[in-house]
Image (tube, rainbow, N blue to C red; front, side, top):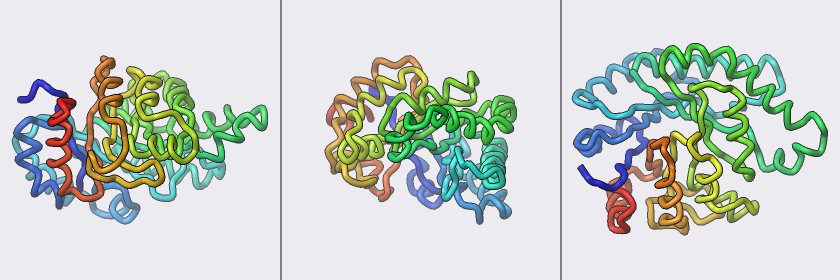
Length: 272
């Protein structure tokens, strides 16, 4: 076992077949990506759960899933659509219960447009918070009972604090914060947001999950670590100050880059 922070990874079950031994050897954090679409969640997903259980025989690490997000907004103003988002959250939690997963990644509602308009009307900022509560409040007790933490991942977030304030408003162990390094780097390079390490500092011990991906500050690249321009020493220096021990999940478009990315960070004496 390395003395450096131990990296985990996000992948579908098909990729897990190739990376299983690497994951289990050091009991690395794992995030499964098979349960994000309506087709899967509305269908019979138990065969996927059984497949995962088989592949993870001998695994005792921290297991999570990426929750549903396509076309979904936690702050949808339409009550009928908001009810659908709540249902998707319930479906994701049901998957977590079946898998024994203890974390589910969900997406922040904050957009670049919101950043420039939340203080344009006196009620706009609170309205976003209220709408997200309307969406998530019905599932909080279930998440708490299942020992599942829903982590709010930055997507377009230009303000590192709004999402954190939203998480705090629940006053629940079931709602914490995630950072995606590539999303933060995009926001920094393209919309004038702070650099990635500032997002870590601002989240503090609310941070319980991080998607590690490299990017160029222009788009959501999900490149292997070292292929972009994220300042990794600054990011890991910020992470080293936390007591929350967030899951360090490499979320790469090309899963073949997972182990080379780990070796790259090991070479910098940052993680392994």
